[in-house]
Length: 442
Image 1 (cartoon, rainbow, N blue to C red):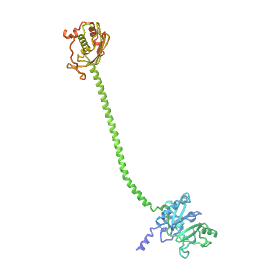
Image 2: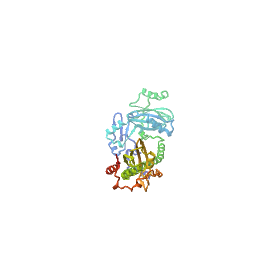
Image 3: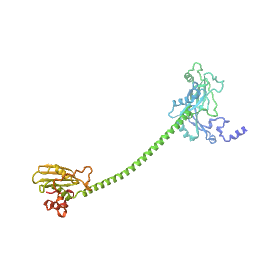
Image 4: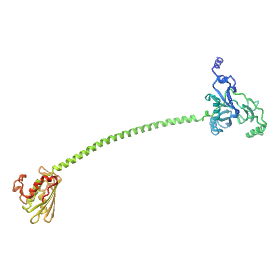
C-alpha cells in the first residue's frame, strides 16, 4: 500500500525535487566566475522551484570551530560570528553544519541579485544556495582518511579545487583555488593550519564528490538566539503586567480631564450667574442711592418753619431786638447761622446750646463766640412722633424756660400772617428759590 501511494505521489511532486531522482546541476541556475549557466528548458517547465547555485569561487568561507561550545549555545556562537564577519558591503550568509564545526558562507547579495534579474528569472521563486550546501567536502569513507586523525584532502569544485583540513570530527580549515594547487600553494595551506610537519607537503589527488539530493544548512536570517523566545515571553509578560496600571492611570487621567472640563464649564456658568447678580446689585445700589437722595431731598425740614423755630428759641433767651440774625446756610441734615448782638453782650454759649437742644430736630449744637458775633452749627434730624429720629443721641432733659416763648404770647404763626419784619418778608419772598441750597439772610 505504501509503495502504491508513493507511486501516485510522484505525479504531484516536481521531477527535480523527487527524492528518488539524483540531483543534477543542469536543472538549476549556476553562477560561476565566468558567468551564469542556465538550466534546461524542460527543467524550467517542470518546476518553478529552481535553485540559484553559487560555485565555490563566488563566495567566501569562514570555518567556525564549535567543539568547545555547548550545543545549546552553538546557535548563539554562529549568530555572533556572522555579526562580526561581513566581507562584502551587502553580504548574505549561509551556514553549513559539519559535526563539531560550521562553515559560514558569505557572498555579495547585491551582485547576485543583479545577475538574477539580468537572467530574467523570477527572484521570488529562486533559492540561492552555495556549492558547499550541496557538496559535503568531507571524506566519504574510512578508506580515504581516518576521521580520528588530522588529515588534509583536495576536492574538485565546479570552477576550481577546494582544500579541506579535517580534525577529529570537525573541519579545521578550508581554502579554494581556481586551478589545481601547486606544491607551494599546498604547503602554505598546511602551514596556515600548523600541520606542515605531520602532513604530506604535496597535494593529494583531487576527489570528485557527488551532489547531495537535498541541500544542507540554512540561511543566516533563520538563525535565532536560543533565548530569544524566552526573552520574548518575558517581554510579553512584562508588557501585559504593565498594561494594567497603564490602563488604570489612563482612566484616571481621562476622569481628571473630564472633571477639569466640567469644572471649567461650571466656573463659566458661575461667572455668568455672578455677572447677572453683580449687575443686579449695581442696579439696586444705584436705585438705593437715588432713593436716598430723593429721601434726603424731600425729608428736609421746611426752611420757613425752621426759621420760625430758631426765632422762637432766640426770643426765649434774649429780649426782642437784642439779637440780629446774620448768615443762614441750610444744608441736608445741617444748619449753620450766625447771630449778632445789637446791644450788650451776646447770650452765653451754654444757654444757647440748652435752648436749641430743647427742639427735637436739633442735635449736636456747636456754638462759637467771636466778640459780639456767635456762629452756631446744628445737626438736623427728622422728628418722629414728637421724638428725635436719631436714637443714638439721647434726648436732652427739659430746661427751665428763661423767658416766655412766642407761642405763649401769641397764637402759632401762619404763613398768611407772618410778622411784619423786613427779614421775614425777605425770606418769604425768596423761599421758592432756596430749595436744598438753604436760605441766606442779611
